[in-house]
Amino acid sequence: MEKMVISIIAAALLGLGAWNLNQTFNLSLEIENIKGKVETVEKGMKQLRNMIAKDRQKDKKKKKDK
Image (cartoon, rainbow, N blue to C red; front, side):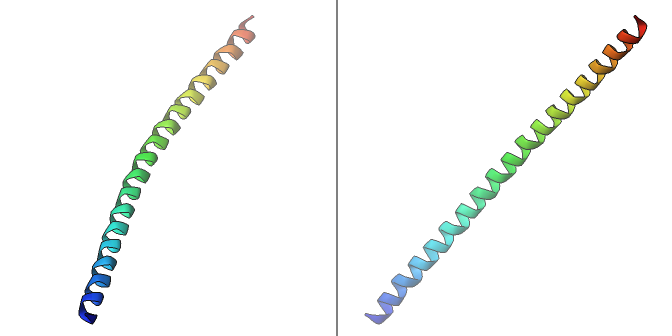
């Protein structure tokens, strides 16, 4: 009886450990996915900033030429 209880507890602990490992792995995959999306947004923002800076330079040149 004692061995059976110990076996059940050990099995439960192993199951919880495997579940925890699986959840940790899934979270790491989600984090990598989010990092990729953040990088994409940052690149888009950088391109937008560059476009705005170029437009401002063009506007300044137009004002000087007038």
